[in-house]
Image (cartoon, rainbow, N blue to C red):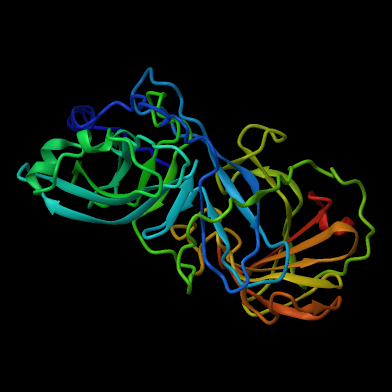
Length: 410
């Protein structure tokens, strides 16, 4: 999401007067440096591989002279063996998900919005549960690193600031001040519930940030984000309790990094080739160090055709994902994007021989299931514009040994 609306003098003053600096905690609290993750319980749980798909361009500094915030990573997901999805989510989360980082569990349990006595202002109350799964006692000063960065005003403008916990707002809503309680070390397995209060401009808040480096003065390094909504991907068994972290696997964006492919794959769809493989003008906000400024790396090719056009398997192999993406950018605000709006939308992944993997994305529907063996040319789905897409097309990606390759060479 791009932000071009500057803060008015009043909003800037409001952001500054409600700001509590993200000071360092006590004890072992400066430890939120591991990957944050949530896991859904599945009938046959297995580790899921997570790969770094790129970096969102960092926003401009909130206040002139501030350090430039770090770009936020975009994480992708892979399925190593056939089983149901979703498995893990990293980077961004939703309400009621138990998120783990450094053995501390954070669960965003919802929010309450009330009109404030001041004109055009709201009292925002954020409800969190915090549990300690670490071997040692821990101090977790949650009021120091939960913040709101943007508020969408009723007229559609986006106000950028940094709103944090306010004791005045807590007392006005009848909630206890938490600063003393949160400085008491948490015993192992202890669970605490907190409510934070913020004075914000009138409007809608979409995400809440949790700082991961409490000694930095801006937004705590790269924060993790909670959407003020439920996960669009259904998790029928609920959140896993203290699950092992996902296994990371970095997929590099090196052009031809795996060398030449066997050239045996067949084209999975007919239509017009609208986007080739390699660097292109940025349309997603993901940037690549291998491309020119303002460009991103396109790790596949796009074939456009009408909605419902047949999509077939380019190789023989095993389906290791068939259904909605569980991660990636949220493109619900992109014109032309159909539900599900995350990343690839509906997609099929096929694992073949010699480390060859094919991704068929933005599908209307899938006609295969995870774990199914398919032959080259077998129908696997129909074309659409789900996920980060602006029109009906197929994104065809090919990876060999973990590196993207031009599918025409696969």
